[in-house]
Image (cartoon, rainbow, N blue to C red):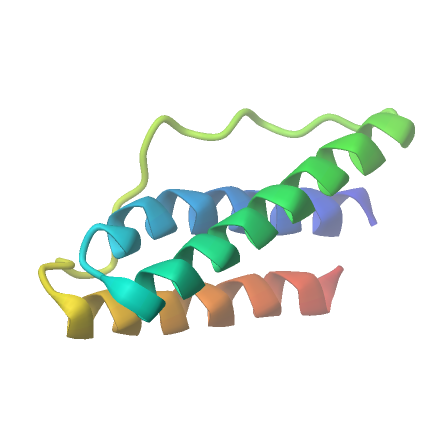
Length: 96
């Protein structure tokens, strides 16, 4: 179970990083929704860190940066990345 939780933690950290890029290419309601999603990922990350601490399990530190799967240059590519990020996080949680 610890391996699945650490995988979910890694997915949450990657999502937080991605939303930093996603948000700069959005405005208005899109940006507000992206910010809410980022905050949700931060909350889940914090909960996972606390849970792993309770289990006395350790996780590798998050990398300083991530390679995005494609360039994010506009609203369309930002939304495409958001969908991909959410799908990846959901897959990680499914295993947990």
